[in-house]
Image 1 (cartoon, rainbow, N blue to C red):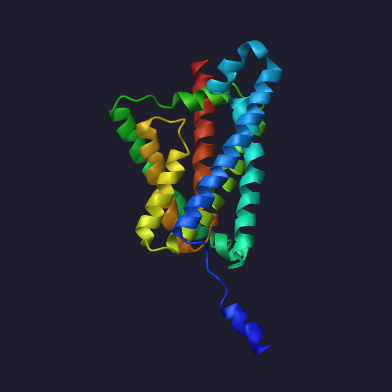
Image 2: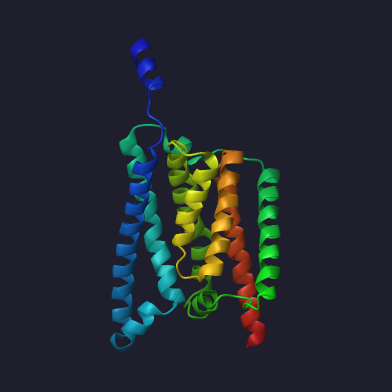
Length: 247
């Protein structure tokens, strides 16, 4: 009995910085390969003559399909990496801890303030209300309900568990400070949004920083998970209203 207690007390922590970076990059690479293969097959089957156009342009149906395919791949790879580590349980590793609704609402309010300020800056710079990527994917989605589910539920779930869960936990267990761990995980998250231009990617990076500190301060993945879900839902509504009034 005493020996078992000693073994439990010596359980490993999360993977270190470099192992986490390697595993995170590997998970993203595997996801890209699967989604690219699947969407290429889909578009080739849909219409061989427009294959190149559909693959390279923003297509909401292809995006929806890619998200739903990537989610189980990402979550499965994360679970495997945590299992192999034989350290904290998945719940502890990712931070599936309860958090009161008031705390979540306060962090969401901070995100809304940031979005308001960024929109004022965007308009001052003469930028369009919505990125071309957002408009085109919305217009080309075959099912609005599936598209909404993909961008508001599926994508934030996979991304937050990966970036603010697995990657942030690994970075924090390494030799870097919490601020550096948050910034680096946010930088990787922003780089994953390569469909946007530089200005938009900077905003995504800053959002990632806020969400990273939200995870650390509350100790729960549910706090940052609620934030991009709210942002994407708001974007979906604004896009629907904008295109409805425009058309």
